[in-house]
Image (cartoon, rainbow, N blue to C red; front, top):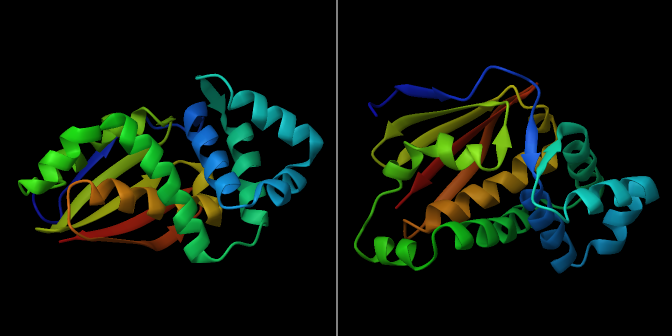
Length: 196
């Protein structure tokens, strides 16, 4: 990728679907951090049944189910650091299953995140369908990731927790990483990623 260049991925659509395993990991992260009761209260009985059942089986879940989950998490009023930690918990589960010992060996020999970022469409496509993801190289160790056509981007919890997941994924291949949300707009989230 050339600095400033972009690679758009995914079909143009706003009919987003989410992998249930992502919701299950997200719920587990909130529960592990001690927020189970408040989260269930925020979902309500009907929402808890709907989201809980959807997260039990590996499947593609409709956007409305995912929105219920992320809006309930948003309603908890967590601090930004708590949201990032919840996202890191999801990242540890997801990336651990995807990469394992290969990633740890790659980090030791100085493997760069760029080959993974260049194929982010494939990784993203295992979690989301129906939105668009763009990766732009801003410098040797700087990237901008844009997610568009995804109504989940309108939920603050989703955006901030996703920085934790992205940070965890980047740390698989780098000694340090920083991710921040930049320029959120309706249906779009922009993340600046830096690593060393």
